[in-house]
Length: 589
Image (tube, rainbow, N blue to C red; front, side, top):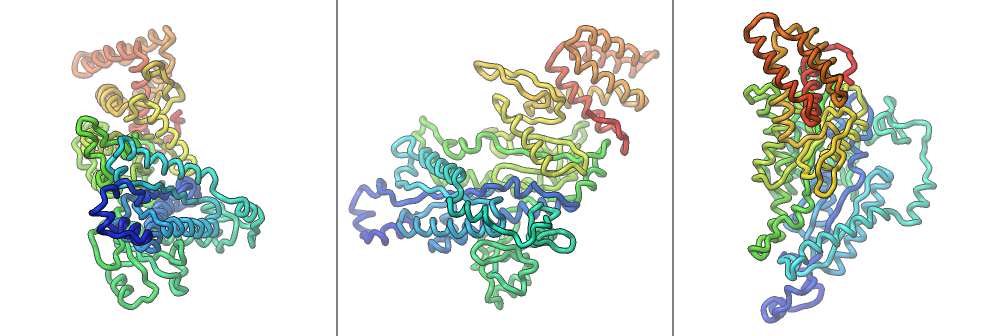
């Protein structure tokens, strides 16, 4: 704040003493500029790939965009002669900066944006775009004086970002893009599918560098920004402004700081290093127990499938902008510092603490004691959302862990919604990302959100949404319903009953049961279900007979309820997947 006031007073040739002490109206001056940058195209850049090393490439692409955003922030701050104290928040391809409302600042932002756009077009064509939004503001606005002025700042800034995303390029730029000629139209990269120069294996230079970066994402402690250097060009990742990125260990970085004229700054990863040339500490969710989708499929219990979790925080924008509104205390806690701290702490959860949640798994479908190391890899985790791949059963269990820990972390004030897909390891990653994204969106259609979608059966059910009923996927549950209704009540009841029963006979019974549950609206299927259950009744009295009685009573009740039948379908699918013999090719649909 002091840096912004200093620049504002200097440009306008104002007396510090007169403006800040003698006069009483400085709080009403538009001395500040609240600025935001937002990267568009992240999803397609990360997930629209095809290669045998897809998992490693996904991690590296995600990390590359994250560190590129940090570099862009530092570039702009350097040009404005400001420090990272003026960075309020950074994460998820988005950032907020507090700047001085001066002519110099606006000119520098506009010039920087044009240079950045040119660089992105050259490197990535139209795949990536950085939108800028900024709004003039007073000191009083940060105090929410008059009431509503604080939230209005974010609304105006968001509107400017949206307009820029809708009108990215000028007519001149569009004409140039349409008339661009590639040197070689005959080859396309087998990873990113871009047409252009490729090596002998059919991979473009950028994808080859990303592949090399993937080896360092998990193990390197430092990442250095250096001026473009012919000696390191082969392995270095390109960055805006004539810079590139290289991975370093501690010793190599020290030598680079002392002797390398090309060195600019460094970022430390998941460790509290500091120093003159350490720009910031990057928190990275680098948890991984496997390097390929096939490995995770082999590690899965029962059926050989991978699971994919996509999740993000519900109503985060509302929480950031107006989460501290409280008329009882006069909105006294609605401050810029608290907003920045909230954003930072949420980012810390998804970038840093999430590693410990996966390292020490607690929830189990069977109700066993915790302490399990999850077979999974964090592809992306930051800001407010996650994308995790792993053994399918571990993915379902860790999603519950994540929800519980997040509820504890936020003291029940925030929730997350998720989509969980189960796939063959060879399924295209772009399709996986799109489908799990749709599942996540379906979860957010629940009236209270705070939901999860998995094992969809292609049907819908109605939920009460105030004045109307809303159609929701049959695989969408509140987290409580999944844990208590699907897993605890129905799945574990099936496990308990079928324990010790011939597996072939049990699975055959389950598949037949699934057909009847799907058609439970027809009255004849109720009689068929009762007949089916009677065929499983043990002849001798004992524990098995008692288990049969208990399951029969529950089935009699469940088959008459739409909600219970929906939960039962999911429970049957879970049981079938976990008890599927490795290599069995029965169609799970």
